[in-house]
Length: 303
Image (cartoon, rainbow, N blue to C red):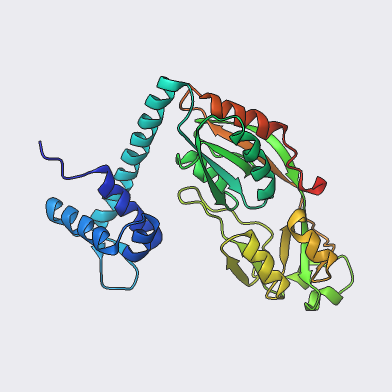
């Protein structure tokens, strides 16, 4: 039987859809653009369908392409899980682990932990994803990550994972020193804040509903790709909003940002450690990591 679909072709399709263009997909997959174009054309010829609309600048899927990709992603996930399971059974140690890390927590803390991890000589390759808001949960639920650090609030329905509380993250309402709100007396009322643009970090979820926080009804919003760029936009005075305390502290000390008290302050956000349990035979590397992550101080106010 001549299979027209391959895991490689589905991976190419998935990457183009996520990156938005053939060129960006080629760069992501470390291949030349012509190889990506050939793979798609061959797949279209073999299946007898068009997978992409090629009229605009951005590569968009046809209905047939979207259906193929939706089902194909299940195949990719199943293949990855099977490969990992077989290797884990043979050695008791994972060949690869992916960690989804909230960008509201300090990456330096994870790097210190990974330094200790490599001293154990597991030989496990580690991949770190930097996710925003609910994207930390999404990475776990869709199989993109084995472990999530800093998954905010309540976990999604559906099961297949375990979780433990890591810390409560402090957020501060910050404005640039030259922003009009900087000169108003504390505490700021909602009617004061709503007149000015809010800066938001875009939730990186692909499948779960995106989460938002700290935006008032009717308020203009500038959405940035992550917490670091949100911070930079607020320092520039393009808008206002809540920032993790650890991220804002040095800019408060330098005078670039000012912390303002608000009448309806944001509560501390509970951050969780979560891991997949659909594969019950957890390897030694993941067991070590989970234990160390739990013991690590992730409370940014103590950094």
